[in-house]
Length: 139
Image (cartoon, rainbow, N blue to C red):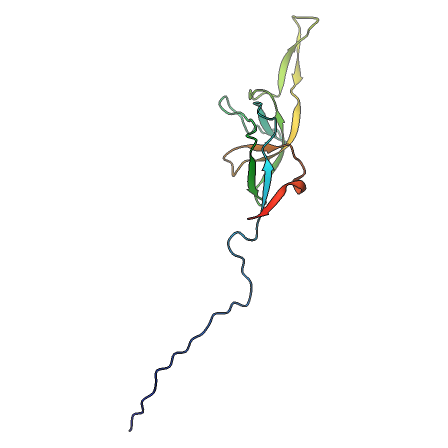
């Protein structure tokens, strides 16, 4: 049997994807909103069901006045801000001006807000209640 020399052959296959796959982060939307509830005044932030998100003697809310970025998939909570100095109370005692030894309880005024907790690590609130008007960006 006679042997015949053959030249080496290389077969190359090229990968050609047949569908588009989004790169990391291309599919999401990011909201940009201002943390402005209450200005710089100390207060408390409550959810609409009455849960105080800033409860405690060392914890209170004041607007940081920064523009925050949050994914549209993160939780946004409807609630309200109370400018109460961060005392965890919804009412305060008012002394009657005509009867100085008499007083009554009054509720602090409330300001409706949308709350973002940054994954449960902090509390930020905005008075811009129309999320459709918030600036958006692709993430």
